[in-house]
Image (cartoon, rainbow, N blue to C red; front, side, top):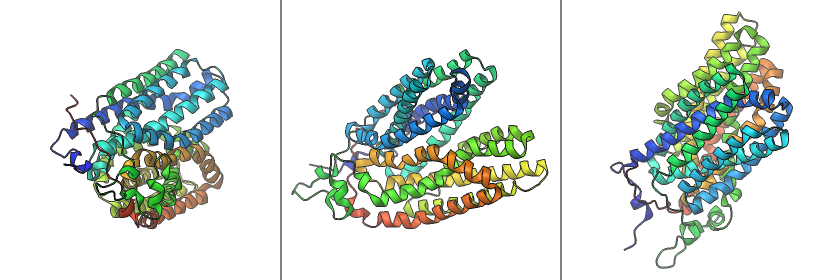
Amino acid sequence: MAHHPRSIVPSRRTPLSGSQRTLATAQLVSAIGDGAYYTSSALYFTRIVGLSPTRLGLGLAMAWAIGSVAGVPLGHLADRRGPRGTAAALALVTSVVVASFLVVDDFLPFLVAACLYATAQSGLSAARQALVGGLVPEGERTAALARLQATLNAGLAVGAALGGVALTVGTRAAFLAAFTLTALGFLATGLILLRLPAVLPAVPAVEARSANGAPGRGQGRGRGRGRGRDGGFAVLADRRYALVTLVNTVLLLRMPLLSLVIPLWIADRAPQLGWLGSALFVLNTVGVTLFQVRTARAVTGLPSAARAVRQAGAVLLASCTVFALSAAPVPVWAMAALLVGGAVLQVLGEMKQSAGSWQIAFDLAPADRLGQYQGFFGTGVAVARTAGPLLLTSLLLDGGGPGWLVLGVLFLAAGCAMGPAVRHAERDRSSWLAPAPATAPLAPTG
């Protein structure tokens, strides 16, 4: 007797917690390597390899632009071949690419390696999301992603500290040791992911027909027709999901603030507070590690997710307003206090926006195409990394306080737009949702 694929999704009484621990371990190990890489890579490629900052920036922008395009086809591959194997393979590819950085000595080899790195990273992110979708019951995904995000930040903090050692030593050998740590981290990540239970490839909605020959749910009218065609990237024709992704991308422009804009802002206005840039980054990392899970508890469905994103827009406006005040001629101690206050508000807005966007990204995606939809939604990160630095440095460093207020209003507008965009995307959701991908029974992961 046939049964619905969801009937074999693990319940709370199965060894699901073991799978989530394995996912968290893989996340932690790769994040430690990422932290070491992100902390030391810019100075390595400029001081040791000899690339100019302009060429480095151009190469990274081109790499992440290509990576943003690669997320959808690699996510589609995860849907059709299984997310566990795809994620593990991409982690191993990342390991090899990072190892190739050890022998890069000119711009062209750097550009090729950077493009491969960004492509593998974008695909790995999409495959991991699909893996969470296959292993974690629908109502628990946001909480699981919150735990993974907290783990990610903890790993980045450890990796950044190790990368800081390389920066302090400053020798070629020290930088190469940091890159080796990153390569080994992704190698270990790939092997750890292979310990997870297998998630069977999704059955395309066009094949999900009932026994009496009725069309599957992917064959509904309107936007369901686009999703019903197998062999193509349906997400590229899904204008409603694209709108939600665009709104989220605007909110992701917060990403370059602490890593790039704030340190430059401090250097320009209060050079004696140069150390504060790193302190604010640590504050953000620790805040997410400690409070992301708690923040995500309020998100239980699409309405609460849209509400969390709207609140994030308001909090990010408040954060930008406080940062704008630091442009005024105030004592150094007052500027430091304003920067800390703005950073605290930013991390609160970040956690709310993250929790809401995770729920939205999953709930609006067909269950048989989680990989490609997560890959498309993840392009927002690549766009923020590529376009954000140029846009924000021009707007904020040149625009000063008014520029901060413009950015804050943009965040608020995006936060308020998410609710209508989600309702628009959800309108005929019941007519196109496909059955959830079947998963193999979970076994203890040791």
